[in-house]
Length: 416
Ligand code: B12
Image (cartoon, rainbow, N blue to C red; front, side, top):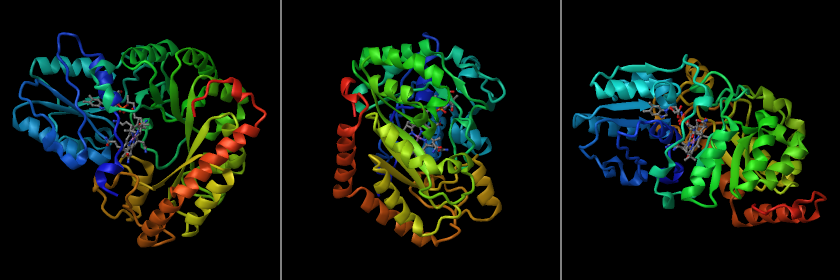
């Protein structure tokens, strides 16, 4: 697959958040690094900037560093933050004027003050500052050219109580599970609705429904706004039919769930999920019978998986009648326990080749198949899962099952 097509595109909520708390006497411009095929050189390197803030995920870190160096060559200071920089500050220091670790809100006012005085520090570390989402600023959604996006993100929580070895999510930037006050979440959605009347919202949480009481207060309010939305959760949401009905009624189109493995075999790093394997299929049926489609995600290359995993995933998707499916290759992101374990075992192929952090590239030596078997099996399974015939079948069976369900979904607004 072409590299530019392997990396999805949505605005950086991290940068919009910092923009939202930047005092009004500063003029702000927001740029997304454009399509990778058009290269970083396409970004407008305007000399009038006094400070450039760059966010970072691993897959595009080389482009981010290149951009930082080009601004600095023009004498413009560059601050870098985000997941990759938080995991590898010493690497980032070689490219940025300042690096920021952890949640940006906690130190951004200090960064701006220092920049105004021409005294930026090399490192701003917010990891121990315990920022509360009660103080979350309104992201500056108005900076966006909305015609470029098919959805926008809103965050209700940071962190996740599960401890999956491979996760490079917000556990890396904050140390506990925390939630944004409901009024703030609704205010963000209202602000988005001002620029896009019936938006599609992606809740940028790692695991949304950890606190169901919170969502039972939020969902009726979401319903009034007539939006469609999508989020990430674990399967425990299926234990609460009342919650599922409320989700559907409030515009939930789909939930994305990391199932990770299609069999019950014990796999390292997946304890919480593997203990619930027996309930997987039933839980998927329950969620889908409420008119909410499930996008089930599987990882290939986990220790313990043999080449049988490819057929096992296909069979699972068919038997569970999953509406949507995603497969990715196990990816050792920097800062994760998985990265450290594979590094110690000398199993990383190119330990600092961050371009391989797309979730579709292999960068470690699998245990029970060869690298070639994994790559070929992955591509063959992709073709099977996304063939027109199988996709039409998956979507058709969802609709057929829904017609037969006894749950009164017909009385609810349709959004799938
Ligand atoms: C929404 C989302 C997306 C969206 C939007 C991404 C974007 N432009 O921000 C889309 C769908 C486009 C996307 C794409 C991808 N994603 Co994604 N995504 C997420 C998700 C679920 C939420 C991110 C989010 O909005 N967080 C909320 C904001 C507020 O938090 P934040 O970005 O961390 O910002 C805070 C701090 O980090 C800091 N900060 C951030 N930037 C800066 C900059 C400065 C200057 C300062 C001072 C501070 C600062 O302050 C902010 C406020 O506290 C995360 C999971 C997660 N929880 O992180 C995965 C996640 C970020 N994605 C991931 C991956 C792998 C990808 C893709 C490679 C997948 C693909 N093949 O397409 C691409 C890569 C995108 C890229 N540009 O490189 C990984 C990244 C891991 C890594 N180390 O790189 C994550 C962590 C999930 C995982 N698998 O573990 N993703």
